[in-house]
Length: 137
Image (tube, rainbow, N blue to C red; front, side):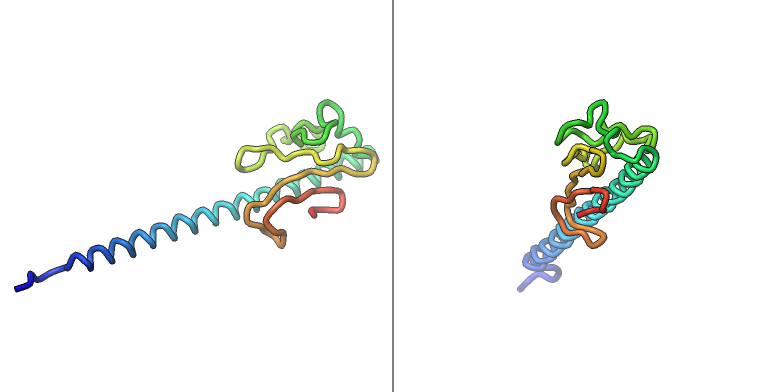
């Protein structure tokens, strides 16, 4: 005579389903966090672009942004001389704690800032991108 109640197979199957649901939820939360970080990166680039635009409107050049530390490729963008036009630039960091980097030293007519998207957002694909006077590429 078999005992009444839940069988061992039912317990194992229920446990596996429960674990699969939890794993799916954790993965989904991770993807949503990456999307939020990407949205923050694009917002940071928009604010940075405004800072460079204000500098250009004031001086007719981007070159003065390269003074005092922003004069080499791969230095953090927060070292750029934009404090007058972007007062919080010293605190500008990637949402995961890294730095946005100068890809082309600001000169009279251009600049490039490099950043990376984890998932892609706002029509931009996952991967490396640059901000320049013409926008995000």
